[in-house]
Length: 209
Image 1 (cartoon, rainbow, N blue to C red):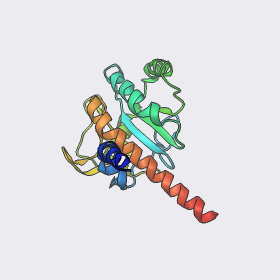
Image 2 (cartoon, rainbow, N blue to C red; image 1 turned 30 degrees about the vertical axis):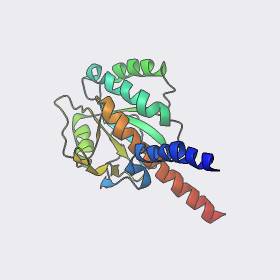
Image 3 (cartoon, helix red, strand yellow; image 1 turned 30 degrees about the horizontal axis):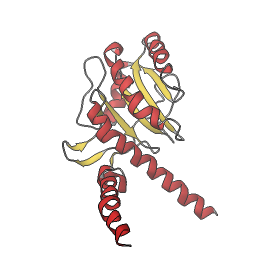
């Protein structure tokens, strides 16, 4: 009995404590809503929607070659672990005229993963600017209408993020050029919002039963 107690104290409790702290505080609450009513995608083609979807929204802009690395980072660290979750999607926004370059990118991505939930939409410059503006962040698109940042949009078209991030304070988006930002923060926050919806679904099913 004493040996068992000692083993629990020495090995099990530290492991439980590590798992608790490593998972992050955010895992135990809702991901804050930072902006409500983000604009939907009616102005873009092909026709896609943010409504009813958990979306990772990004802006690749005119200089797609320079943003390819961002797409590959997101594909490996965010898309592949979560793409099989119901209603999860990646939406990348680009100007009209970039369709051929997107076809090349999709071909490259398809060699790494099932890309059925990667969505690429094209629009006029003013529509891209309006969509980005509707996020109401402290960021701006670059001169090529792109951004290294990607954003978590919930099923009600609300921007989710961190209202009290230890490094940035209000954290609207995640830097896709930074493996640390994706690994240490974004992945955690995507887990939070997916868990939030799974919990809500279980509660609804329990009420029906």
